[in-house]
Length: 93
Image 1 (cartoon, rainbow, N blue to C red):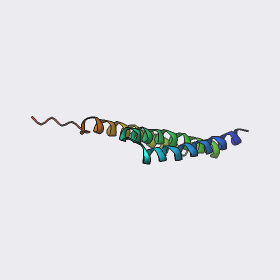
Image 2: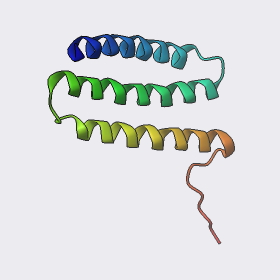
Image 3: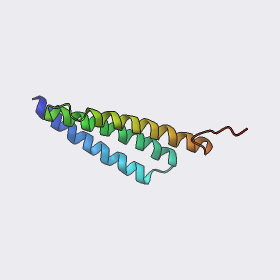
Image 4: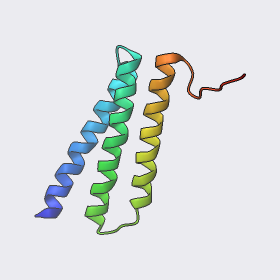
């Protein structure tokens, strides 16, 4: 039963990944694309988590951690760049 539910959730996450990718490509504004990229990262974390449940393994835990860190840092960097144009502030006295 759990295996069947896991496969159904995996298919739903696959559809969500495709929809996020489409929003990321044809988003009306750059801010919609940034949000779609963040949502794509979060959905990929869920996808890999469901693969871990289906395969009964903990091998992909590192992949989930890297996806989470890259998704967070990428969203923060893109948002900061769009807000002010500079990602790292350097004070040159």
